[in-house]
Length: 101
Image 1: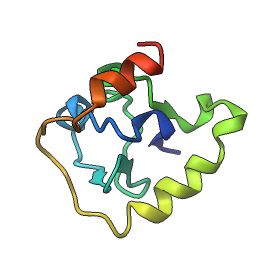
Image 2: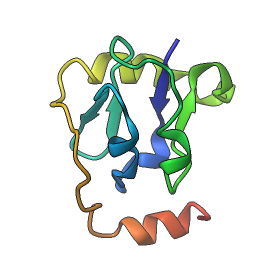
Image 3: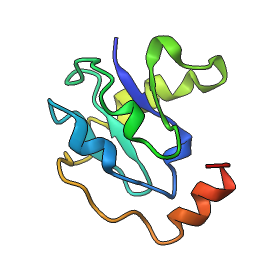
């Protein structure tokens, strides 16, 4: 099993979660992050770091977000590794507010 990133990360890309990952499982997409399930050790250290609650253990994933299991698996194979905190996207704070955080 693995931890994964869902759609709340889109257009935010806060990266506090990346620095919590002990195995460098995060991948940087154009508009969001992904987690490589083959690298993730399911420690959950990244989950509380996400300010928009975009990260879930796959066993705790709400059913309406199940598509993100396959999306993370597929996209993480073609995106570059990210291991350091970066600035969030312009407008990320507004997106965070629109999500209710």
